[in-house]
View 1: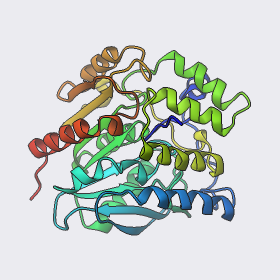
View 2 (view 1 turned 60 degrees about the vertical axis):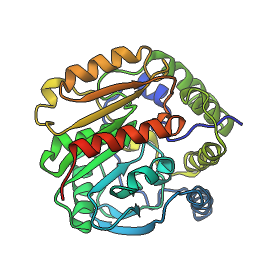
View 3 (view 1 turned 120 degrees about the vertical axis):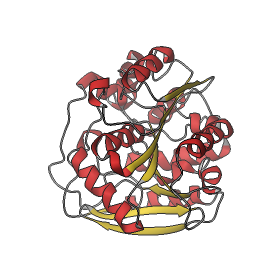
Length: 326
């Protein structure tokens, strides 16, 4: 079986067909899963992925205005904090190939979103726009006793990290963006067709798997295959739809004038998410002239596992040069 890891944009083809206009949740779901049995299935595969988490960790639950947020914490106490934001319909487990390298130097907080997947439990207010995400994220900072932290994300999580930096720049020390979806330029048209075929036209688990294999550039490993099955559980058994969460948007230079903190952007080199990754890189450079922007050759959307050693080394180097709080 060919697998795909750390995917961030679920039926992005359908998203492109219908447009990227914001869509708001009408009410907070009683659970992120369709039933107690569905939740048990997703939790079981979540725990299976955590069996190959490479470093010691603890699970922490943070009470927020939007419910109880689940966080996987690794790394030495007292080290500078790095918060990792998952891609759309992924969760904290997606960072299994990266947390070890980061946790050698930083206190790493891998968040399950309050809006989809993972082990968070929504309750109370709904997450309807970026301002709700700001409140939710700020409450994590307060819970762990930080005024400022670095953030990193993949795909939708990349957009969210940048959006947080735009809204609360004093609280974000540095931003790492791995293969952002949208954010600087629209994605390639092939995603629209493949997304429609696999997610809107008689969708099933095998078609989802085929789509993820394609967007991941065909990358597969024993661990990524296990992770993919967990993600498919989240998609199949989850109660939240793609348009039930705040939609990401494209930012231009005039939107990002207060994003002055260091930013690293790494994009997959295969023409999958973007027809021409160099066009994406140029758009990112125009929007954020001070950012460090690189194409990772030979990778698809799963660059953080496909080239984990190179991506980890680049992230650690970037943070070591740009992020020192203590």
